[in-house]
Amino acid sequence: MNAFLLYIDPGTGSLLLQFLIGLALGVSMFFKAIRYKIRSLFGRKKESE
Image (cartoon, rainbow, N blue to C red; front, side, top):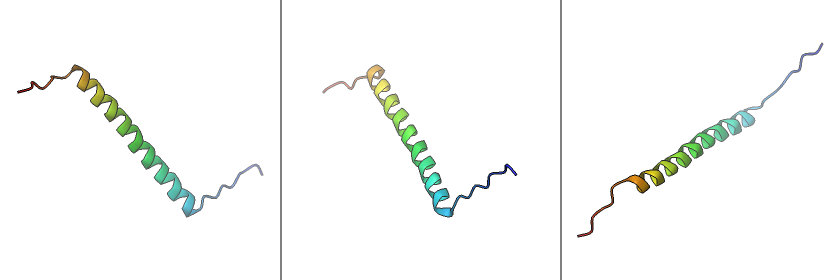
């Protein structure tokens, strides 16, 4: 019998879920910061009064 029985306890599932959520939020914030920097380079400059 070559079947491997894998067991993932509830704590591990919670840890994986938190990791995936954190990774998604981190990646989205990274690209948001890059987009902001690019827009600030090519955007309109505010005129001083």
